[in-house]
Image (cartoon, rainbow, N blue to C red; front, top):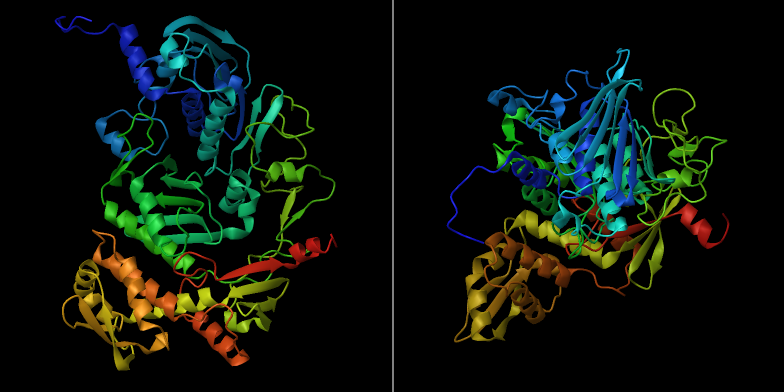
Length: 595
């Protein structure tokens, strides 16, 4: 390639394909843009058909507002949009699209056929555009709304086409996009098919909780905690999973700003900080977090696919999310009837319908719903639940969500293996890990006191510790933090220290082992002071807590329960392990094959 060529303006055909490559990365990008356009158009019924995982063809039909005949060819011009008109309008954008890049970008790398009719118009319009050229533009009879079929995808860009993955992989990306877009829109009903096979059916839902359960999995139903919060000019809402329900990746973490799905490190960090000391390492929660704010408080025009935003006050957004989640998670406790017995379930299936389990099952990439026939276009299968208001709903709302219970209100039954305390309440048996429970109590006590009002216990014989030069330096550098935690340590010669007192709440602990544990916990270089303090508290709580296989009397159990009632975050120990688990009567009955 010659490097001494003159600078020239690229031909329109080349420039359009380069621009399209930024917006249309793979078939799922096409699905995203067309689906967002349908939602922007006010559609309440959407049918999506993916051929060859979306690589061969994509068809999306909606019952939205449609496009007028004079606007149809203009819609395929670059930067033609009905969403904004001036630069100032960028700071008031609430729609998904606003750049006018989607349709021309898709048409630049594929063949696009659009059939559309506005509500109230006598006839519609059909247009065909391939590789940027209009091949047909004519009046036709068609239903109200818009149907777009995209085929010959990336035929004009063979380099991009050869990098596409297998059909199942591309189909999976398309389904992920569909879930992200549809999750906040309970008024939208959608079907997703791959030719004759149904992949996903999404009914209308009345509440966000129902939407999350349907799209992210029915196993979340009893593990969701509502989140809400307010700050000047901002509002937080959504649901997060209880700490006892985790995933091995961040794929179940969904963030929406003014209804737009975004990927943002700041939001992810805020959520993970709220779960600090509640999750085991390399475990992640499931969440759907919604932040509402004035459009001029953020910039949505910073990413080709509009997946990132910039906040005017990022720290305020982070604080709002952290505060809202921390408050919600701190109240997690056992609940009576959390997993109700048959006949008293929170949702009851209406008689005469079948296939409910399939509707509630999360989509599969390898197969559709077993034993079903393809639905005729425009019809919704009868066995798919419809949560929309009105008579004949498949699901009828039962009892309201149960309120958390106090540990001290549970009926104590006994101790198993000197480690697990057994309790009972209505319809549920609860097992409590006595070490994890007491560890959380001690940790919260240490964190709340930080030396103030913490009763210290002077050692009758001070403990003299010899250590390596590195450990001695770390211990000396952490003396103030240790003193906050009630541990008084002083130098006592070369590489030697003496421990004079420890917190009384740790009881008769092994001081030498305690200090060794603390030094191991703060051995990493570059740890911030706050994290170092946190690790010291965790090690101290673990050492001072009631041990496994330690017999407890009824009075000791009552005291432990009262202590749990008085602290936040009682659901998990500081290492992230669960403090309690719930065994509903329905599960026990299945074990005995009574159901």
